[in-house]
Image (cartoon, rainbow, N blue to C red; front, side, top):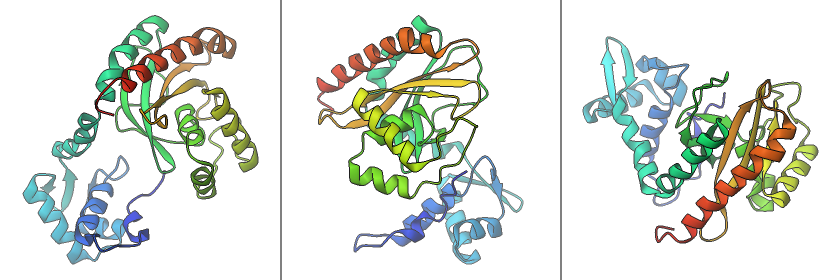
Length: 267
């Protein structure tokens, strides 16, 4: 899992940089599924702050309703979700896309998601599930590595050559399964292929038994702003069926969403 709690220390502050605000965000981000409750000392250790600094920020967040205190333990409250929903509601593409995704899911009987790129990871911003369960439990806000996920490769392929080279240079290519591409040159070749063909299939590289196909969603400027996918169990769906039946329907849905984005005044 990527540790993002110290990202603020890697930035080069400019004249408009507010260090106390950056530290507050670092404290919020220090909480995770692995650390849902922390003591003041643990927050300080995870963020690189002094204990006194962590204390001031935690009590400020508590006063604002973003943190609750249980004895010596601090936990985030549901109010933190307001920060994420502010992002989702500020981009109407998600509400434009949802009806098309629902129709797609009803047609293919598989789950569909939309994600955006955030550094070396993708973040799920919209998901329409089916009743089928796969091993990875995904929801809005979930993160996955970009290099070995279908939406991640679509999003990476949408970067400029310069930005792509930088991201790949800073990414540790870990073999999540025996099928994961971990050779940088081979991955770069695969990303160029994805960029040319306009879609990506990941066959058990992220997780054994999981096959996923993704396509880009573009802004009015033509740049890739998000990716849409369909995730399936390889025990139910063959790669041949994915390419011949599922992919054309996904691409059609992506075109519908892109058309709506193109004619929306919000972009």
